[in-house]
Image 1 (tube, helix red, strand yellow):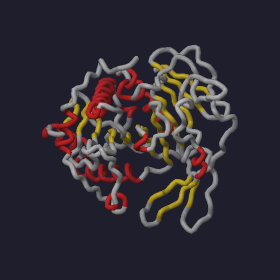
Image 2 (cartoon, helix red, strand yellow):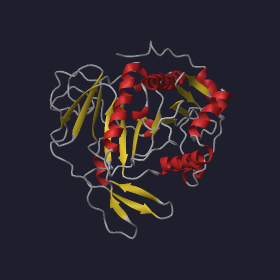
Image 3 (cartoon, helix red, strand yellow):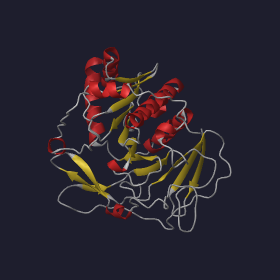
Image 4 (tube, helix red, strand yellow):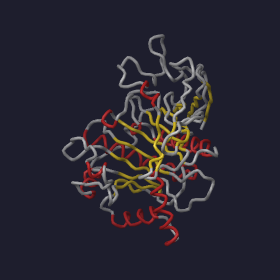
Length: 366
């Protein structure tokens, strides 16, 4: 993996990554000449026992721009400023201009509940220069590069004492709120372990303490024996609709042998995990013959410097569609009570996805 670090005119950092040496890269551009100087803050929710971030400056961010304005494009003009330089690179990462977490957060209001600065980091990850591509159409070695980028960013962000959790994720499609169509995701580095991974971590620690092995590791072994919900089964990685799926077409992707973070993957695991990920993405698009919207979230161990043998790196795909292709918005029982109500069976959705024929090699773009 080859890298290049640059600084934008407004002070934000830009990292370029490539499968071959990076040459002839222009200076790091920015649509914004001056720093934003944002200072978001967090407020404690006493009844839920969790922090909530407040970042009112995000109201000014780019929202569904016209096709001729794409800040993630690499061509520049006076009327179309960009975030990315021209040059020979494959993946780019840069500091989000409108973060809900920032290392510069320094003040919080004095309120009737505890408050604190929203210290952390929000980074944008551009998967490719090709605006017409998608994560699923990238070549396997390009997806492997992206996983190495996730590993490096996790390590560098996690080394900070005020960062406790790092999550790479991708929102895809306007149906889930994406405002730019260029294939990209984000990395959030949090000052606390957020509620969802914190609950997963608690369950995993309890299970490991009792059984001496990981909870997800045990689930994967059971899913392998059952076989009905399998989407991809490789020597080192797996993709399946979990028996406890809360969303139609929900899929989990994971290495079979547990590792705590992307940085802990060996080469064989990383390669097979890329195949598993690409297979799922191609099946999603192939099932409806259109780009399929989803949230992809990668869960790793906390970055607290402690060993986490109970943790198991994995992705969860949360698509918003029902079988009728009507959007599945969260209902009152799901939003209000946190109890999901499914009107389809995981086994049926797994069968639909399994029946989609995909060609991993033929689908790849350069």
